[in-house]
View 1 (cartoon, rainbow, N blue to C red):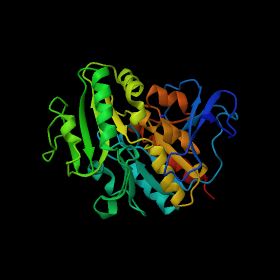
View 2 (cartoon, helix red, strand yellow):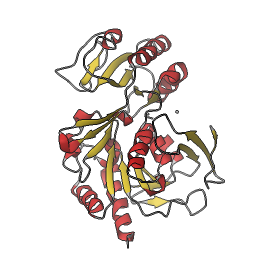
View 3 (cartoon, rainbow, N blue to C red):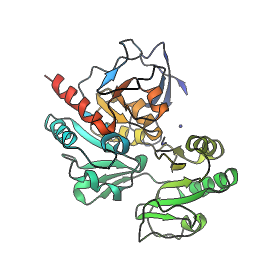
View 4 (cartoon, helix red, strand yellow):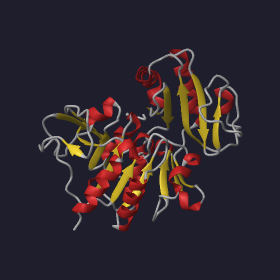
Length: 331
């Protein structure tokens, strides 16, 4: 963004500005796209819809081989459950030979809600691309793309100076650890509570840092994100997925998009063969990279403004509605 140039060379034309970003280090894909498409808002989307067909709004015609979906606000309902309709759609997609990847800002330890709905490969991309875990193997870490403690500490110092009152938490492979002033959004009995400088000490034996979290009690969420990027953007990737002023900071080059690109490259899957779903700023790069991308009707305004295809809200099984359309159109 979650929530970071030369001109793109694809076929997107009038009505949008497309910037092609070089592939990040370690990324197997040819490039990541961040595309701004100016389309009118559809305030009452009840099924999968799109803007009138033009070169700027046309989706890929490639047969989908992989579905990449965010969880909170996208696949999950507001009560954090997966509806029966969505469970059936995910299973039908896998049966049709379409791989499904859950791509989320959640840490690996919060994946129980979808563990039973991962078929085939068993993999999920967590912590905004910082880790890939095998949910069929007890959440084993398959890939870790860490945020180096020195870089995280530089972010802490810069953001703390620019936004007095900010507090921080450190997400490691072992769990979360936070400062005394940081709100305990989720209670973790194994969490360490100490100043960020201690939590990021090189002597810490809790595993690699996968994400730094920054919270501000007074600033508006997007204002805090813009400020933090301005003062510390060189040290990591800043995004957000919470309705509060809670920022998520990953290592340079780490995002949902770049890790998804790696996973797809390993399978010989091109961006045009990927259908992606999201709702918040941390989904933007993934939605820009995928050949076909849907914003949920309940999405953040920036996501709605940069994505041409819409589906119903998460409370109305918007992901399932599109999957059903895809399967209906298969030969």
